Length: 537
Image (cartoon, rainbow, N blue to C red):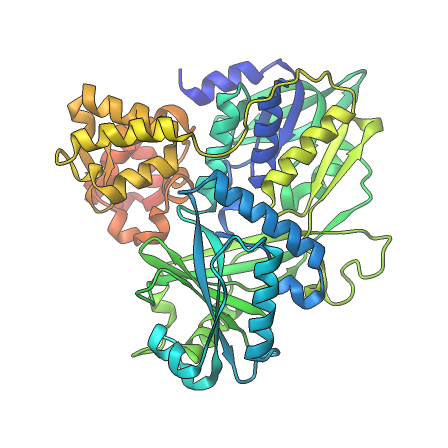
C-alpha cells in the first residue's frame, strides 16, 4: 500500500484533536507544531501540498525592508526576527543572500535614503547579517556589469535570505516533518461539507484522484486555506471578523542574467520594488502586485509586458528579453488580511495594506482561522495556532520535541562521512549534489546514502543533468505522496523551472515515471507531456 493510501485509511472514520485544512506554508507549519506537541493531527489539501500560493512566492525569506516606507517598524522587527530564526534553524536550506538595489534616477527614494534605511533594517534585524554597503554608479558597474548603471544614482547592497531549493520544497519538508510526528497527511482531498455536532466536527472529503468519498471527525478545525479561507469559512458556517483582499504576483523564469549569486533589486516604473532572483541555473524576475477578485488567476499579457519592459529598461543586455526567453512562469495570489470594520480595508490604497498575519480563534465553533501570512513568519504562525488550539480546551499532551529545523551536527556528520566513502562512485557524491540531498531530505539523506551502500543499483543516475538517482526517486515515491508528475517536477524539485519542457521530455523522464508510478507511468507521462511526447519516449 502506498503511503498516501495508508494515510487515507487512517483518516477515514478517524477521530482527531485537530484537522488542518490547507497544506500551504501556514497549514504545514501548524500541523507540524500541533503534531509534535502530541495532539492527534490530520492535514488535508484540495490540491497537492504547497499546490497553490506557496509554490509561487519569490522564494525570499526577508524582513520586509519595503515596509519601512509605511513606518511598520514593529512588523519589520518581527519579520527580521523570524528570518533570523529560520536562518539558524535551516543553515543550509535558508541562506543569507546579498541584495543589490540599483536606485534609478526616477526612484521615489534617493540612494542616501535607501542606504540609511538599509542600516535601520540591519539594526532591526539584530545586526545578524553582513552590513550594508553604498555603491556609486562606477562601483555598481564594476560589481554588476549587467545592470545599466547609467540610469541610476548608484546602488545599495544589503542582506536578506533565500530558500535555496524553492518555497514548495520547503513546505513539503514541513509536511514530512509533521508526518514523522504522527500527523495524518493527505493531498488531493477536497472538503465538501463540515458540520459540528457535540464536541466534534464531521468533515466530508472528496478524493480528486479516484473520486472516493470519506469522512473524518475532529475536535477543532484549522482554516489554513490561504486565498480560499473566506469560502471555507462560509462552508463551515464560521463567522469571521476578517476577510482577505487578494493580490496577484507573477514571476517570469529566464536564463541566469548575472554571474553573481545575488538578488538584483529595482524600483519599477510605478514605484514598486521588483527583483531578479537566482533560481537554480535560472533567474526569476518579478513580482507584480495587482489586486484581483478571485484566487483563480493566471499570468496575462499585461503582466508579461510589465515585467519585461521594466527589466529591459534597467539591465544592459546584448539584446532585450522577450517572451521567447521565458522558460516558465510563476503566478500566485497573496491573501492580505483586512478587517472590514476598520478604515482602509482595501477600498483605499491597496499597496499600503499590511502584510501581517492574523490568527482568529472562534471558541464557540472550535475553529481557528489563519489570515494573511508569509513564508518568513511561518514559525510564528505555527506556534500561535498551536497555542490557540490549546486555549480551546483540547488536552495538552505536553510534547516538547522540536517541530522545525535541520537535524543536528551528529546526523549531518554521519551523512557526510558516508558520502566521502562513496565519493568517486557517482556524480551524486560530489559536494554540490550531496549538499542538495541534505537540504532536501535532512536525516532521510543519511538513510538514502546507506541504501546507496547496500544496493549499488540505486546509485544509477536517471536524470544526469540534475544528478537525480534511482535511489532518490524511490525515496520520493515512498515518503512524499507524489500523485502526478507535476508534483515531482514542480513542487518536490525545481525541474520545471530549471529545465525547459522539451528538455525534460524523453526516455529518461519515462524512466522517472516508471519508478514513481509503476503501472501508471504512461498515464502520468501523457498527463504532463501529451501523447506525442509519450510516443517519442
